[in-house]
Length: 557
Image 1 (cartoon, one colour):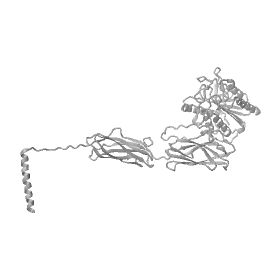
Image 2 (cartoon, helix red, strand yellow; image 1 turned 60 degrees about the horizontal axis):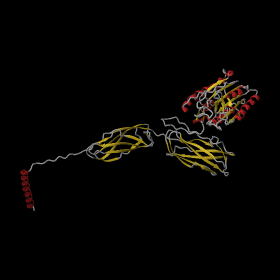
Image 3 (spheres, rainbow, N blue to C red; image 1 turned 120 degrees about the vertical axis):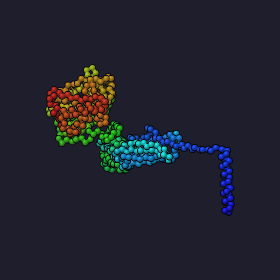
Image 4 (cartoon, one colour; image 1 turned 120 degrees about the horizontal axis):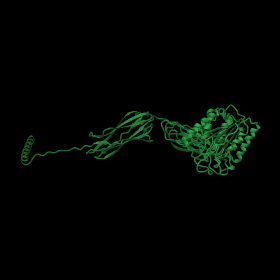
């Protein structure tokens, strides 16, 4: 066996020598060069961005977002097994990222990379910087790029029923077997966004839902945002009790930042007042830490009207509020102006209820009767009374004489004989011989409406009415001067002039001097009218000669 192995080895050696000798005699040596091609990755300029779920470019608490960029292989070779690397610095508490797999990027090709980012409710206010790069095994990965993103701490929402109205008013009284409407605002009154807001209405037996959904999905409510919901209900004769408890259950995404509310609706023998139209609220763009305005179905001056301990038995009020006209445009919210002013007269100024004469949508005959009535009272008291006269409604000018008129609801201004002259009004009130007469006129006499239009009887341009002269012991405070328009304050559901008049009475509990009332109303109306309506409105005051030196110290009480 060993001999065989030795023999074979010797044979192979001999063959190798011969072949070598033959090769060296017949051919030249040869060499080989192998060239390796490598990738080269680059994150494209301008492609690195961050997008979050609510689109504000900030990592809010409990939110999802994505870091996006494009990476290109500029090398000659393909890039295999590419991986994304992400590091973060700064206020990254409560923030996590997921690194995706990129895989292969061919030479000259581009890949879109998306890195999911999520946050918990443990985030803090600050900024986090993400450093991103794409690696590949041969070491020709991208250079790192950074992107800085603001972070915000968790702000809890607070979902509440902020206000309600039954049949359009704040007096919650209904009758059995009569449909009644329930309106209420659901509002997020805190700084955090509320999501998945759901309203569940619960009503007692023998009260039926006529219109609306018992369970209603509101969805998202940003800070300060609100939603007005309306339901129509009816109680049958089997309902027992003098109150109908309507329970409004609220819930939101977290299950702990919504408050339930029960509304108790009084059951009476007759249906309550007419339905009102709720003016839409404007929701502005969210600014950092804005003032929170609570959604309401009635104005702030209509609530919590101060009640005076003192009484004014010798003060009488004549209130005419003309809103719904037969043949010309309505005066928005004039009826509410008159009703609420009447409440202030009774509650804040201390007038007995019988001393407050209120005329809503007064005809010419009603207006004549109102003046006749107060003149009779003045005569019965031998002039020992004070008179408050309030008017909200249209005023019209005589285009030839420029005299001013109050417009009854059954007139249109074309026939001035059917209108009440302001000069006559001043003369009638001034001749009564009473202690004091104070007039508040929330009207203009230019031919303009409380909105932006003109009365049908007026020309296309406003007329500057000639002011009538006050007589007797009289002071007149008017909503606008000359050819200006008396505008509404739609958000507050009043005329601009009336709102600030009522606000001053509320803030001072009726104790303000008449000069203080005028100064406040004049300043606030001028400012707010420019902001709200883009137009000038300047209240004016006109005392009669006999009180020119004393009226400033008057009080309405």
